[in-house]
Image 1 (spheres, one colour):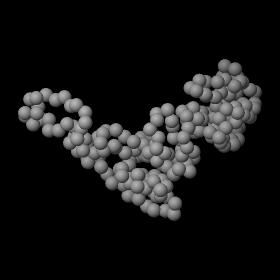
Image 2 (cartoon, rainbow, N blue to C red):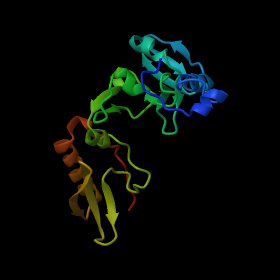
Image 3 (cartoon, one colour):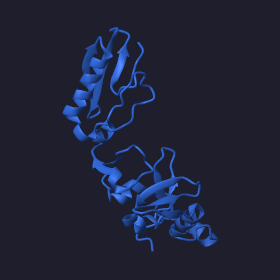
Image 4 (cartoon, rainbow, N blue to C red):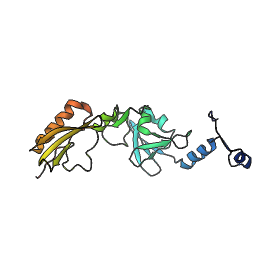
Length: 204
């Protein structure tokens, strides 16, 4: 059933080392990695459970396309499945649900819970829009996205990222002023895609 030309050594065919065009290997690989999911039905959605007891959510209307695959949690928290016809190629649950194959389009989890794959929590965005909705990084010491302390200037700095380029927004004596400028930049440039910042109380 393989429509592509496959080159093999004649001696391997004669000795029985090569037994197929590659389909058998793919099928065996999928079978070896096949671990059934279980599903719990809720009012408007399902909770899927993989073989390691990891849970993920999706809408009832997507049940038929989801149940065709065996999902597992990846290292970065997303849920993926092996494509049976490829043996090794993976598909991501949130991209399958949103029917996205274009690599230029990202699927953003609005509430940052990548196990919540209900359509109300998914939206199509560009890479820069997706980056604007990222959580505050672990290296951020101020607790405010885009705000940092500059030892060189002895002031609070504000910066942003757009189209993979860093944008300097200024230095400020007051951390709240740096925060205000950074948030205003988000409103002007990222609108609905910016992550809502949590208010912090600092002891300086």
